[in-house]
Image 1 (tube, one colour):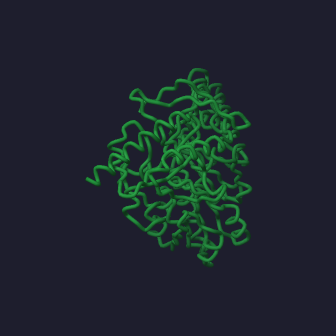
Image 2: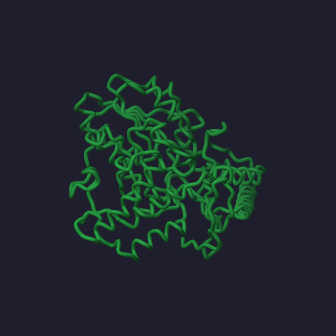
Image 3: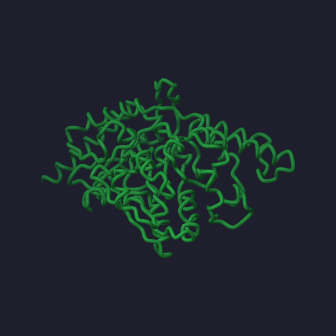
Length: 407
């Protein structure tokens, strides 16, 4: 959809927000921010400066003026990304997105793990497919894999992880925030438990960055993956955080010119890097505003008695992601009668938009629940009036479907 901005502003440091609308030509309300966020106008301006000024050179052609200007832009962006997660610039490897970064982190250490006899990998059953599929590829190479089932709220605990470890465990990969339910995993507690065991710790942080302050050092992560388009930056650019002690154990997926510390070959997209850096420099804590939207929406649709998935404890979820279902109404049916509201079904990165959610299947053990689950996700540009309108449309649609089912 082609979204146009009527008025935009972002939260101040105090978290206040002057909201505009992100509505397409048909009046559709965008509530799928977990899939991708709208590009911040200031990020677009930062990218336009790259395209319009003398930064069009190849960032790897450092020997001339145009290349050196491009290098400067990339390194400014690298520093901004690093600062946003309390890392060092030399620990940031730019990629095409979180999917590539996850693949690089997991597949890139396979030979190292094999060489030290650490061929057991531990993860959870609700990870993003870009984590589960690379881990499955290790299984096909002879690794043993444990996929933990979570609690009904979608959380694992440090005790659950510890009980599943073996003397051969070499990698633990657990996402920071689930992309479908918004459940926050206790990474710090897990990291503390893993400390001193010689086990590498990776996390897919794509859904956590920008939703709460995130510190890779405090989480004691060895690898972490990020994506610009989840934080109002451009699509097509992401990053892998690699703890500086582990640069030499990571093998590249792509053979080529040896860019990005020899880990990720390919000419860097300078403007996209600059956009990622700008988005990171604009991160603000808007949890209070998103929590207000979440409560407003849930209060409005309470009469429908929705089932809500995810943690309920304070700090246990990111307020911008809400996974719900209306028992007896499949998501495909709901989509067909709600053209005025854009929301998520399953994982947006799957090959088809209606693929059943493996997350809800794992949490509930019910295929029917997975068929009925929808994801509502709010963002910086979601207004309270849009929440009112979307809730009204959903109430009308659900009641109409239920009336038809009763006839």
